[in-house]
Image 1 (cartoon, rainbow, N blue to C red):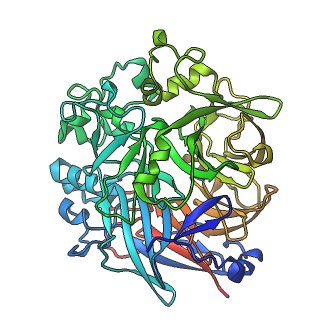
Image 2: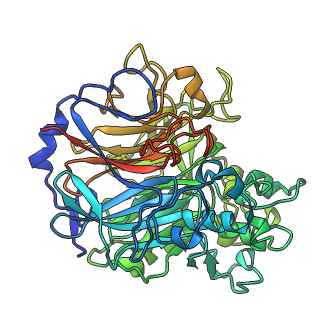
Image 3: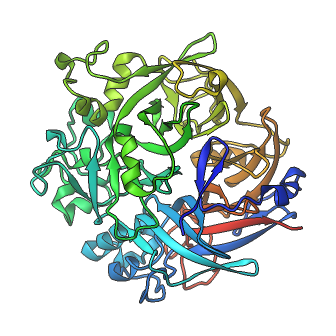
Amino acid sequence: MRTLVQTGALAAVGCTDRRNEFENLWEKPFRSVPDGSNLTHHVSPDLDANIILRWGDPILENAPAWAPGKPNPEAQSLQFGYNNDYLALFENGPDRFLLVANHEYVNPEMMFAARHRGGNGSVAHQMAAVGLSVVELVRTGSSFVPTPSPLARRISATTPIELSGPAANSALLCTSADSEGMKVLGTFGNCAGGVTPWGTVLSCEENFQSYFRYPEKKGPIARRYRMGSGRLQWHAVDSRFNYWYEPHESNRFGWVVEVDPWAPKAVPIKRTALGRFAHESAELILSPDNRVVVYLGDDAPGEFLYRFVSDERWIGGQTGLQAGKILDFGTLSVAQFSHDGKVRWLPLRPGIGQLVESNGFSSLADIVVNVRVAASLVGATPLDRPEDVQPLGEHVWVALTGHGSRQAGQKPVGSVVPFARMGQILRLTSPDGDHTAEYFRWEVILSGGNVWKDSDLLAGPDNLAHDPGGRLLIATDQGRRKSETGSQDALYRMDDQGRVMEEIFRGPLGSEICGPCLSPDNLGVWLSVQHPGAGGTWSNPTTRWPDFDSSMPPRPAVVALTPRS
């Protein structure tokens, strides 16, 4: 079932709009989570929290039950992946739902017993654990149970994926295995994303750099992309992750991948017109003239906020990856903030300013492959880790997670945005709701810190969503700042004036909260609990959430929050 239902500016897919029926449950304030951090999660007394899926749960036909401790890549390829992040939910008939989950990265020290962490089997298992999962769920009472389905699917670091847009067929993307630069094996680093009006999911490749082995002395572009030393040792198993063998392979990652969850045999596509960087999210809205606008954050210290505007107009009625070709042609721009509260969107096209052949930009392919360098040349404003970007109505909400290692008073060189070590949220306002306009207004709507009660801090705003009443949901990623705040990462609600109303969910020790999204019936909010027990190991985790079995490590999981009526 694939039904298009118009909701606001953007067409949602497969959603039965029950907002009028349930919005009163979200209109009222919830009691906040009690103080304290410990081994398990905590939830508002006014909400129920149900664990839906865990790492290793069988999701494909003939998938074996999860067996902890030892690598088994064949089994993992049939099971729910690791470190679930972004979630997208669709309705697929009465009490049936389709869940798409990103799997961002791996923590081998918590996945495997020490004696099994090295070697080919461990790396193959890691490659099978990243990417995406597509799972069909059946609602039974208050529970959601995975069910065998022809739509179920795993996409991993070895899944064939096509390239489209200006960088496809570029020499910068050609390798010994793909002399035409048109097909890639795999996706990883999948962080946040977005849902399109035509029923597909955009999955964002974020921190791809750490998977590649690069020489210690790197060129300027490799340094700008922070290419690493291959700490996960994938290069020892697959030579394409070694710069000396395949110098262009890393250019084939750091893109936005479009996946059609309704067509399990459809080959995913990397849409290169959206640029190559550490993509946190790719959220869409339609302009008044029905052009598709995509907002994109580059999650690294001192990087930029981007916007893509399609050349063509969305006419509706089309579905699937064929309709997604609208994302292959358009203008990618980068944000320049000014002290007077204006944002100017600077187009990234060959021949504009310093984007000329003498600087290495003779084509649009050169720009999108090395877009960080291009954006610097046109005068983009550095930001402190721009992560999730959520458009709604005339506004655009931008989470700046902040950089925990910066000292008070510091900010990225050249930035006009005030620095907040605990992170902040910006609100951009488009003129009359025209998201294609050259100029917007900007303001800081929230600065991390003591924003909702004296005994706790909201730090590291990361992923954003809106609850059924339109209030902003804020999921946090504090990182090393947890030692300062004394609390674990959580999910908060904020009104449109920047007032934080309550903390509605707090994760277990070591975890990060991410991927909040509405259920298709607008009753509940789902979220991801990522890397619970971080800072520990398989044999000595900081928590064994959610199973609390001494024979099991902590497992990332999906949680559904529903109001108690």
